[in-house]
Image (cartoon, rainbow, N blue to C red; front, side, top):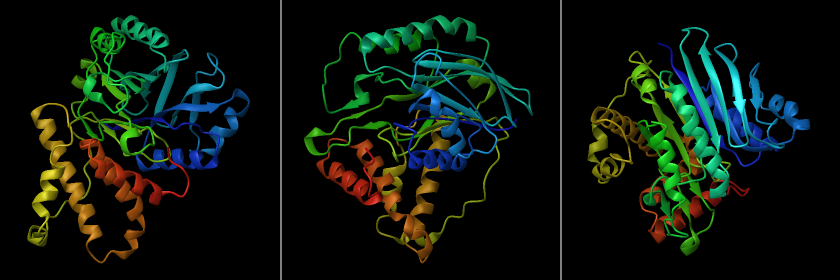
Length: 348
């Protein structure tokens, strides 16, 4: 069963060349086969030019431009691997049916970009309720920026009240029979760009699946990246079966254990809000520790050529530390300092 990679990202505008290149690099880095860009702010008159400038070879695109102009959701896919049809969209969603041309596997995807207004989001919640019966026997993936937290703990800073409309999101997800797959990366996916007491963090970006999808792709998993070029985390979802292709062998170096902070690194990176079954959590924890050890080794050895990436890496780690401890003033200051160093242009 060949792997399929799907991505979604609230890029906060796609009209600049910098944002277009960021999407191009994101697609290549994550080897995406299908993606949904949210809040592209692209007018119908510019849509063809923008998609061409992203330079994703012969990719094809659809949007919800018929429902609202400028479009709020832009979907792209690799036509050499996927067939996308039966596209249906409104202002807050775009749903399509996907067929893998190689394996003939089929599944449905709904990309979401919810309104800021709780009242306007009710149309989205009702849509998920209405469409779910028809997806009961079809693998179904739902992902995007819902502009809503699921639980009170999905927020830090700002208004702490939990009002009646906050329960509508969770109610619709439960009614639709959707589940959160195992995931890695940051938990609080949106940052307001402020510092100190003004900081606000939220989990607004979500990935959900129905049980039928998990039955078909047992190793399906999501990842929420650290922020770059936007105040939202980009998310990726990989549909992989038991024969998922593995990378090169990982070799543990005994010299690592001699360093004073070795156990601190293991302890700090063992459990980063990973969800899923016990076996999924163990596998994801081992993967996270392996990756952090590889990065740590790179920083502390003679691989000078890779140290030019240090600014972005430091910001990634600062975001993760802040995600785990948002009340720490030191972590807030470190994240803002690393963000400023990482890019001369405003990120958030």
